[in-house]
Each structure stands twice: as C-alpha cells, then as structure tokens.
Length: 326
Image (tube, rainbow, N blue to C red; front, side):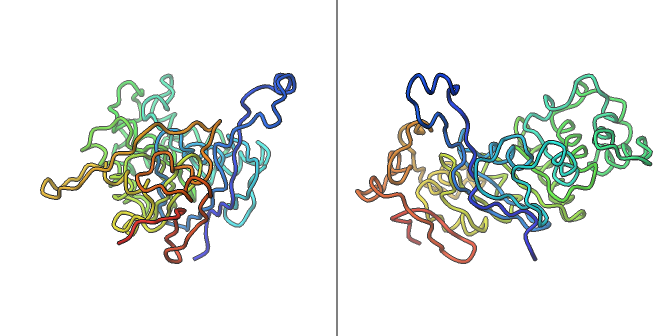
C-alpha cells in the first residue's frame, strides 16, 4: 500500500532575533532549527506515534504538516501531492482531509459555542452545503459514544473525557484521511485515557483513517500505534514498529525513556535508567552525537562525529555509533 503522507528531510526554523538587530550584532544566522532533517511516512489506516521530551519538536512537526509553521526545507507529500509551501487558501481546502485534535480537551473548545455548534463548525468553515446540521451533530455525537442529548451542552458542562470525545467528533466531521492527535489523553484520568484510546482505535478500524499521535506517554504509544519515532532535539534517533522498539531498543535515549515508563505488571521489575543533565539548548547544540552529553555509553567518537542512520531492518532504524545489543 502506498503512503498517504510522506515527509522527507523536513526542516523547520524559527528566527531568534530581528533582522536589524542581527545585522547590528553581526549574527549571520539568526535562526534555530526546531526540526532537522526528519523523514517518515504514514499509510492509510495506520497509526504512527511521535515520542520525546517537551521541546523535542513533536508539535512543531504537526503544525508544519497543517501549514501553521513554515517549512524551511524538505518535502511533505499528502495523498500524492506536494503541500510544503502551499498558500493559506490552498491549505484551507487541504484541511478537510487532514484534521487536528488539539492538546487541551476543554480549552480547545470555544466556551461560547454549544456542542452542536462545535462538532458541526467544520461544515460551516469549509462551506459544505446540503447537510442537515442537526442530523450531522446527532450522527457525530453518537459515533463517539455521547449521543444527541449532549448537543445543547456547553464545554464547561463536560467532563474532560466528554470534551475529548467532542474533539474526536469534530476532527472526524468531514471524514478526513489523516487525523493529527496532539497528546490525546492529556489531563485525563487513567481509566478515561483507556476509553479514549479504545474509541480512537475502534473508529480507525471502522473508518480507515490514518492517525499521527504526538505524545510523551509511552503507554499511549504502545496501546494504539503501529509504528513509533523517538525525537531528540528536533531529530529522529530511532523509529520502527512499536513492538520492535519496545522490546529491542537500539538507541540509549529510547532505552532510558522505556525504563522510566510505568510497568502495569507489579511483578515485572525493571531497572530504571536515569538520563543525567539538562536537555541542551537549540542555540548551542552539542557537537557529534547530540545526545552524548547525557548518554551513559558515550565514547570519544560520539563527541566528535554525528552518527548516520543505521537500518536494523527495512522498517527499524536508529542513529547511534554504539547501539544497544540484544
């Protein structure tokens, strides 16, 4: 099956100071690289998880995909069409097929609108005619397990889990091909998280939609994703099938993240691997392997030479001079 979304060598940069001040100070490159040369793909009906610490570049990628962050370099192909650098009007039409679920389940909903207005707003924004909005609201709310009675409520009358379901209904209103879910379980109780993840999985199977999940919660990744990519300082350090990465991590950063993940089985004791030090500043990236300042296994070559991409298999790859053994 061909890829629905193909990203090649994506680079996103942000200006740190204004052009005039940069000239006065003699700063030749007044930008930071928030995302550096990232490549990945998502097939129809597949779920990919982006994992990493806060500030690693996960949400920056998501915003670049939907045209909210400018792309400095690289390619983004969606459904066979190059979309990097499209204008706002062209992106407006594209957003019917690529929707976003924002992080805050309640805060992402306008407090002035009823649930009916919230879930049917995509029809009005994109000028979809000939639809009975009451029927659409009923259909969408039933689809996410709320039911038509919720249509008259306002966001402050919803629990976090109910608000997240409204966000799911809104994201799926126009039958998109891809949903980008930014921290879909943030702020929710563990039991409610499971309900939301089961809902997303069920809807994906029924509708065939592809999902890009952005999270730092590895339990979410393991529960719902087919493949995962680990980010550090705007780069992928490891990516592959979710089960392969969980059981056979190759990068020390992946190993440390997995060791800190809560284990649901109380009898399955595991050693926690602490990551020492702070995340380096994007303004002063370490030379060589950018993780070497925090890596337990760093050697001289790690401090001098940036590692290339090594393919463990056709689908599992990593960037490390001294990968972990079995």
